[in-house]
Length: 317
Length: 298
Image 1 (cartoon, each protein chain N blue to C red):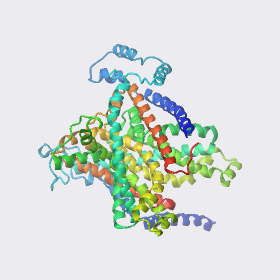
Image 2 (tube, helix red, strand yellow):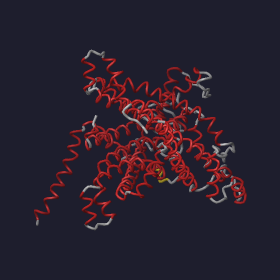
Image 3 (tube, one colour):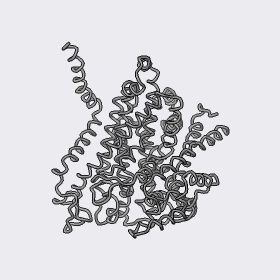
């Protein structure tokens, strides 16, 4: 098991290196660079000479391979360079916002699972009933509603019924759980809604299949209560494909988060990402893409490991 | 000779009629989605005739007007009729949905089939590339691509947004089509084509691609809804068209957020339009998937 984890971690290196090359080259074909956005942004007439000087200062006039080498050298020391816009270290820019975004991501996952597991199981217990159809329509619309619009609906509802909106100042949950939750539960709901729809659909269809199996009939025949049949006998097997979906959906969750943060005016990674694209801040963008790629690759690993815990028939070596 | 000529065309004629009929009979829910899709297409084609007002026209006498007999869905902060803007907004939404899904899935299908057919190093390099792309959430790839491509607009449609979404779906499609194509590659008829001396291009295009049509079609319809959703999200954060173009995503951004209290209809209706369109395409896509491949059916 330890050997397997180490092997997987080693395999991450070529993937992340590939991602680094890809994002570096992709960003270098952008027409117009940060210098123009920065100095000409307010419509002022700036001479080509001044632009050239600024490029020189930021190192943009050097050959690509040199720029790449410098960035890679930094990456190895976990130094992501300096933002070309604010001139603060990228790791600092990301670090101060990562906390908030991770809070929302984890909270959204919890919210999603808390909704999805009972809803999916209920639909599976009474297949083709009115309840099942209602749940299926609900999950179908969950997939169709844009999460940022869901966020706007939540804001509308809060204003309409409570005449209140949370102030967007973030406090980590370990410092002030109440203040943290009253702020972040809303974006988490908006993003987690879609997540719950996907998971509930998957859980329903696998649960329907599992409940048809012989061992479930045996469990029922020996007089096990229905609750126990579902939670202890059916659930572990039904969760297997669901865990994979949870892993895949985590990518969508991050994506939803990037947009939804704007709705709630939260100063998280999403806002930073959008700002970096509009400023053509390559160094910051590269750094963020690498952070997201690392989180995604690690999530896949965790999902695979969780899979082997849930299903003892799978042994990694 | 005449019988030999008419025979295949008669079959083709019958199948062209029978297949859609069979689909609608077996997947009545998908037929519901199809009706909504046809209505949206109708609205897009006849927007000039259907829209009660000019979507660009400011009516400063009726700014932020609530839904009424004159303005069924109310007006926005510039006094523009929301219903008219929603009707015109079907154009960018459908173009982005169809075009980016078609381009992305077609590219993915060709790359996936080529990768499976040649195998070996070609396959390895392509799949490594795909794996790297897949470490990114689709929306991140789309945002970066949109930023790289810049702006390139024709009226209410941002062509580079179409390209960005298309590129973002390519890796997923490549992977699925490749595994379908791998199963075909070793079938005797592909060997036969190779032995007959057909060129690689001909074998890929004429012999292999038609046989990955089922997963291709499933993904093509499945991604249309996703693409509309992505397009709305990207336009919302400012990576698509800008004011005063009538676009659903754009209608939700900027001004709308300043009038939560005064004009909730500015937020409700454009979002509903996106949801309805995506819902319809998803129903259609799920129906088509179950019809083409019954083992996926719930």
